Length: 266
Image (cartoon, rainbow, N blue to C red):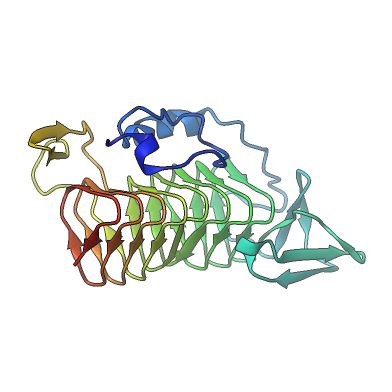
């Protein structure tokens, strides 16, 4: 029951080849570093994108090239609906991504998909993979080993580390997401926090069907199945598993362990 395939649909997720459908649902977290360390990242153009230095102007990524935004027009439509547009010399640059002035990219292992917007003040530490039509908002802090699929939102003043966002997952505002997986169409309310480290030493364990399960992970935040949601200012305890379509209500705390599909936690 607590398998990858019971929490997620992976048919359209572009980086799902290291997910093992019959493995425990936390298995992708165990494999994430190896996958991202060996991913074929593009070479960043350091003449326009300094290493750890805030960009002095907007940079456009198109067809494997980095371009200055000089003499270009950027239309900031809804990124996750494919409405970000760049027009240069009267021509739309299909699939162009935009890194706004003031954003910081640190390290060489950073992959940015088509139609991505990275806003002013975002900090992205290597390694990071950001899927097409995703949005990294102002003040986002990606601390490394962040993998986002298509049409994701990595939100304003949201801190993310060693975590996976499946397609259409959104953490829009003031969240902390560490050592966690957000399924397809998951949405986090403002101020959601995933606690990922127990007060006591040892790995994260919980009881399921009268059996004690040891995840083997010292750091383990939360795993939210497809279409789950959290309310504003909610908190999950280390090792929280929410089945598909579950809801964690505003200001509520979820205990460690498995909460079945369509659960409503108050």
